[in-house]
Length: 407
Image (cartoon, rainbow, N blue to C red; front, side, top):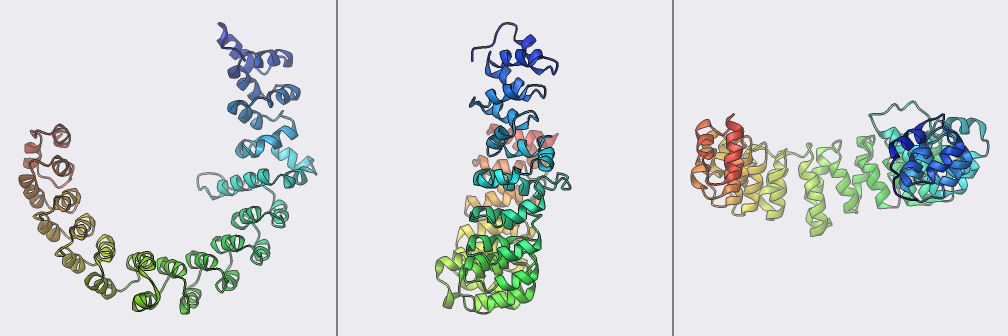
C-alpha cells in the first residue's frame, strides 16, 4: 500500500460513505492502510472485498473486520480469537446464534477462540458499569463447554458468572485441581459444594474455599482444625468471618507448626484481621522480632496504647511505620516529631493527624532537608505562620507548594 494521495480527505469521505460502490471501495482499500481501515469498517462493503482485506496483517483493519456485520462468518471466527469483544458485539452475532446451527461446533473445535470468547464474556459480566442482561454466550454453550477436554476451557466455565449450579457440581468432580480451585473461588458456588471442597486433597483448592466470601464460619472452623498448610492457614486468617479463637490458635502454635517464611505470610493476616483480640496484637508487638513489630505498627486495627509502646522501640523502621499510621494519635506524633531519625520525622510531617505544633518543631529543626519541608508545606494542619516562612525557602519545590497552599 502506498502513501497518502493529495486528495486524501475526499477519498476518506468515499471510503466512509455507504453509497460508494463495492468496486470503488475495493480500489480505495488498495491505495493505503488508512483507507483500507475505513473500508473495513464500512457496513456497505461487500463480503468479497472484506474477505480480501482479511489477508492484511494490519491490526486496525482486522479489528474493524471483526466488528463489520458483512464480514464472512469464517473470517469472523478466525479474527474472533484476536478480537473477541468486536466479534461478540458485532450486530450479526445474534443472528448467527439463531440461524447457524453449526456455529458452536465450529467454535468448539478452536480451543483458543472458545477461550477468548468465554473469557471476554465472563469479564464483561463481572464489570459493574455495563448492562448484564445482554446474552452473548448461550447457557447451552456453557453446559457443553464444561465437557471440553481442555482444563483451561473448564476453568473458564467454572468462573463464568452465568454457569448453572448443575454444571458447577459436575466440574467440582474434575480430576484437574485447577478446575476445582476455580469452583472453590466462584462466589456463586453453593455452600453444599464448598462443604465437599473443604476436604479436597489439594491445598490450593482448600485455600480458595477459605477465601470465598460465601464460606460459612463452620466450614472455616473445619478447615482450621487440622490444617497443616500455611497457605490455607494464611487464607483462613485473612477471612473477616474467621472467629477470634482460631486466630488465637494460629499465634499459640506459630513456632511449633510454621517456619520463619511461613510466619512472614501468616502473621500479617492474623494481625490485620479485625477479629484478632488486642492482647494478641500486644503480645506480638512485645515479644516478636522487629519485622513483626513493623506489621503491627502499620496495621490499622492496632490500638493506640500499643502504637505508643512501638513508638519507643529502638528500631527506627518500626517508629517510622507508627508515624505513617493514620490512626496514630496526635500526642504520639508530637513525640515522634523530635525523633533522631529523619525518615521518622518525614513520616510525621506527612501524617494528616500531626498537630500544627509538631509540624512547626520539625520545620525549625529540618531547615536543610527539602523533602521534609515539602511534606510540611502540603500538610493540611500546617499553620499560616509556618507556610509564610516556607514560602521563602531556598528550595524551589518547597516555596512553590507553600505559596500554593497560602492562596
